[in-house]
Image (cartoon, rainbow over all chains, first blue to last red; front, top):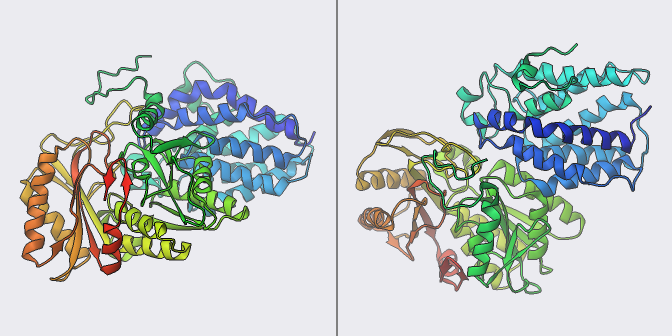
Length: 217
Length: 340
C-alpha cells in the first residue's frame, strides 16, 4: 500500500500516543544544554498536529502543509521551526498527489533535510536533527515497494538509532549548544533522541532508560 | 505536581510556570490601554490604534523574560507591533507573520530584532510567506554585544540592550513618513553606531526549569555574559563598581574608538535584580570617563530597559551620534517604559 494522507494521520496519532511518556526524558536530555523544555515543546507541537483535521483532503501536499502550519502556531523553538520547514518542503514536493510509493520516501526526506539546512544554517555533522534524518533517509534507501510495512518501520527506527549513538560522543557544533562543547560531548542531542524514541519499534518499557539500551532487531 | 518550587534558590511570584507569559501579557495590557493583544496565537502586541496608512511599519519580536524588551517598546515613535515567545524562546512563525501583517500600512514593514538563530528563522519564514502576499519587508538585526564575537565577525554578534537605539531611530524616521528603504538604512546605521557589553553577578531561572540558567560562585562575576547566560569573556572575583565600569568602557572604546568632541547617548541598563542605586554608581563613573575623553553625553538612560528576569548585573551601551541620529533620538516617542 502506498503512502496516503491516512498514513500521515496514523503516524501523527502514534507519535501523539507516545510523546506524553517521553516528555520528562526529553526535558531531562535538554536540561543538560538548554532550558530543559524540548519534551514539553514537542508534546505541545504533536498535540496541535494531532488536533489538525486532515480528513477533508486526499492531497498529501495539503496535509503536510496543514501539519507544518500547526507546528508554526504551537512553538517558536528552533527545533519546531526546523520540523515545520521540513514539512513545508515535503508539502511542496508532494502537492496534488494522493498516493506516494514508499520508494520515494528516502528522496523526499533528503529534500526536507536540504530545506532545513538552508533555513537553520546547520551542516551535516553538526549533531542536530538533520543528522538523524539523514541516517533515516539512508536506511530507507534500501526499501522497495514490495517491502513490508514492518521492514520500513524497522529501517527508519534503526537509522534514527544509529545516528543517535554515532553522535553521542561528539560535540554539537551549532546553536547555543556549540557554546558548551563539554556539555554536549557524551550526551544525546535532544532532537535526535526524540526522533529515535518516536520511531522506536517496540512498545516502551516502564523505564525509558532501558529503552535506550535496547537494540533494534 | 507542585508548581511552587520552593526548593529553587530563586523564588518567583507566579501561579503556574506554563501560565507565566499569558498572565504577564494580561497584566501588561490591563495596565497599558495604549497596547492591544492580537494575532492567531494571541502573542502579538500592537498599538491600540491601527497603523497609519502610508507609514512604514516596524515589527519586532523575541522571547519573553526581558521586559521592558521587546513588547514594552510598542508605542508612538517606536514599534508598531511585537511578536512574543515563551521565556527565552523565539516567537512562533504565526505570530511573526501576524506582527508583520498588523504593522503593514501599505508602505512595507521593517523587521527589527536581535540576532538569534531561532528568531531569525521564524521571521525569515514569515517574511517569505508575506512577500508572496505582496507585503514588502526588510530586516535589520541588533548585533551590539561586543563580547559575543570578534570585530571581524561583528555580523555574528548577538543583539542586547543597544537595540533600543535602533528602535528609536527607525521609529522616529518612520513617523516622519520616510520610505521602507530609508527606515531600514537608518535602523542599520543606529545598530552600527551602538556597542554594548554586559556583566553578570548572578543567574536567573526560566519559570519552567528547576535550576538556574547557569552556576556562578557567590563572590564571582562574569564579564561579557549574554542576556540568556551565554558565556562571556572572563569569570573572576567581584571588583569595585569603578573597576568594572573602567573595564567595560575600555572594551567598548577599543571596539569602536570615539573621538574627543563626539556626542554619544549612554544606556546603563540593569539586568533585573540590580538596584537602581548601583546603576547610578556605574553611570557616575561612566560619565567621568567619557568627560575626561572630551565626549559629550546626550540623553543618558539609566534603568532597567532590557532585563533577564532576576539576573543581577548590568550592561553599558554607547550610541555614537551624528546629526541625523541625534535628531531621531530626541524626536517625540511614547511607550509604557520610555517617553521622549
